[in-house]
Length: 178
Image (cartoon, rainbow, N blue to C red; front, side, top):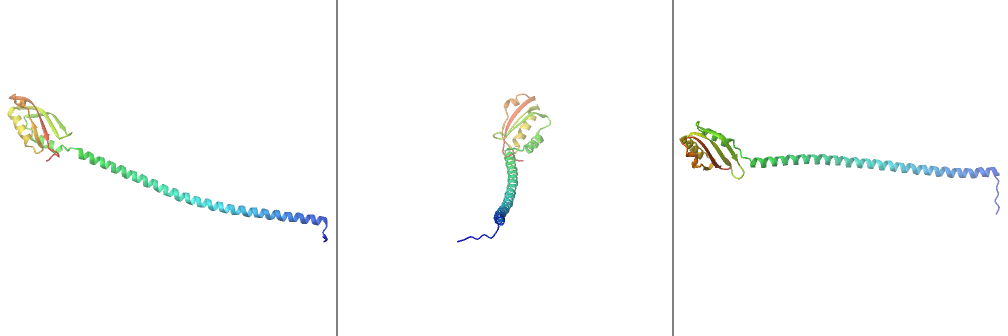
């Protein structure tokens, strides 16, 4: 078999270079096409990740707001519970003090008053009375108060007939009645 080459050597070189150029052009086009597809995939992935991040960040922000609101509600509930406990443990002495001051005769003076509510409500009074009869009137009035359970009135209070320095202790009912 004979190969007949009718083209000149220059044209053969030009043909070989053209073939090489076309192959390089095709390879370059294929590389650019693959790079373009890779870029499109990367942009799509970036958009997907941004959307996912924003969704997650939005739900996290909502969770943070919800958590802060729950924390505020919990703090209010704790403060309310504390106030209820304190009000349950508190004795309101005002009605008792009003009644007590209304029964003090003009000739009897109170010099010291101690109110205590540790175990049972307790009232300790000290004062001075002009006469023994004034002191006995005051003692009887205290015994008649509705919130007084027991009265400790020492007999030493009645030893002097006039200018008496006296003291007494009373156990009060709980809760205080009016």
